[in-house]
Length: 251
Image 1 (tube, rainbow, N blue to C red):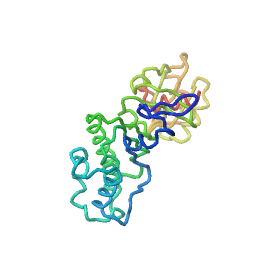
Image 2 (cartoon, rainbow, N blue to C red; image 1 turned 90 degrees about the vertical axis):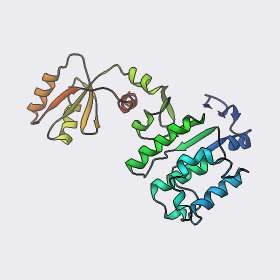
Image 3 (cartoon, one colour; image 1 turned 180 degrees about the horizontal axis):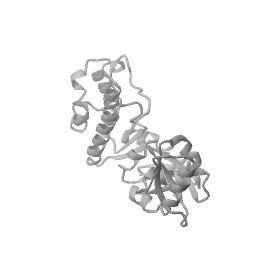
Image 4 (cartoon, rainbow, N blue to C red; image 1 turned 30 degrees about the horizontal axis):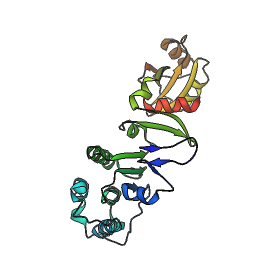
């Protein structure tokens, strides 16, 4: 739906982003990373204001936002600036949807919200997808990217890969191990100094490494024990999208 050509200008839903700006504005919804609604206006006033901008009413499209807005409607008289992060998120999404757009663009929408609100937000996006709304999300969280139909891995403005989440993971051909010990910080440096360890990145409570065919788990464990590590665990790991991104970045 969003086309980014090598030359010329991009298009959205078949519309040129410069020539057809007004047409795109009428069919696209946008939610920025930073809360940008009117903080001195109430929840209800913000929603009605955005509906007016698009020459519609809250009542006309309430069925689309009901699932989201109903969660903050009891606070409709509260100033937007006094809302919690999760409630601001729901209000901003409601305002972006009030004109029933064909495409919804979300710029890191879960930044600064708690894990429960983040999970609820993605559940809401799943239900919106059933309304035939094309949703494009930018996010630094690879677990969020895994919930999308297709993903584009980008670094410094360059596309590294565009595929389904499963397609990205299936193309990971390296031997991947998860390693941990009682001294995780020095473990990182010791792993990177091994000649058969091709890459090494901290990944949650372990370090994920890609290794050469000649290396065995027992040999690596012995090497680490010789470096003074105790409680060493070396085991195969299933690659994630983050593993794929880190490897492509390294390459």
